[in-house]
Image (tube, rainbow, N blue to C red):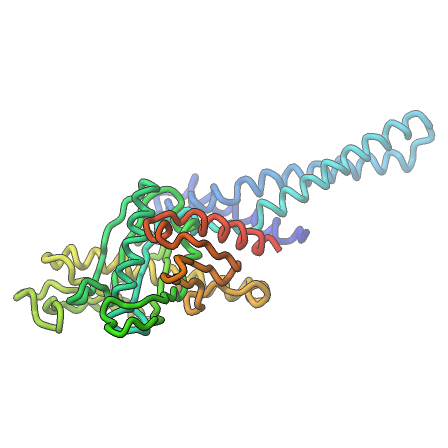
Length: 353
């Protein structure tokens, strides 16, 4: 345990306390919110560190007394007390280690999911629609609120892309391991020869955040408006209601054209942009502090093929944990817990490694 880092936290705690209690009139509402949040985060650590210092001081003083004492009975009792205090110090050190280990707070967030058709043409777009239905049924079973933010439908009922939000209790932590390439093996409705085809769709699960958590400067955004378009690219709106927002420093782009109102499209596009920027931030942090562990257990990156849906065998296989279930029909109807629960257990165990 490195004592210096707790001394740094102690200084930070004193500095923030001084700002909030003695200089609050000079702070903006956002600064007050951020400082208060930080104070609440580190207070339990400071309280435990103070306890650790008090116990250490008590042990040191007792050790000095034993060194100069001649009374055998006193020494015997003092040594028992030393043993008791040493155990308390050991527990305090363990508690400090637990408190100072960064917690994955993103798991508590709502989520934005992005589904995109991959290889396979029309069949991939139809499979993307099937995945959307699967997640819709699952959300309904969990009493989550689903809202479509953006979509690009095909003429035969598929989706080239569909983006939607899920709101409820700790959704991102539950859905995050759905990110990756999902593969389907079946005879497409468009196939006249009855041949088995393989196509794919990608799924991205992003934690949804509020604007203030990222503190994006308006100067870093470029907002473009244009006509909405439908199947085949034809215009479906005579006004410039579609919105495209570009975050200039990162080059990340989000767009929305589903609503007739430019304002509503802008709000939805900003939600998507925020989620993508926060996801980028989390991935950069993960890369910096956890690259070695990620190499050992796999990153769970969305570019990896994670799951196969085999229709002829009524089988779904998650390749990351070697799980095969012969009830594909139930899974597509939203019975996902038998896949998601083992995934959470697996990755939680790996992260503890």
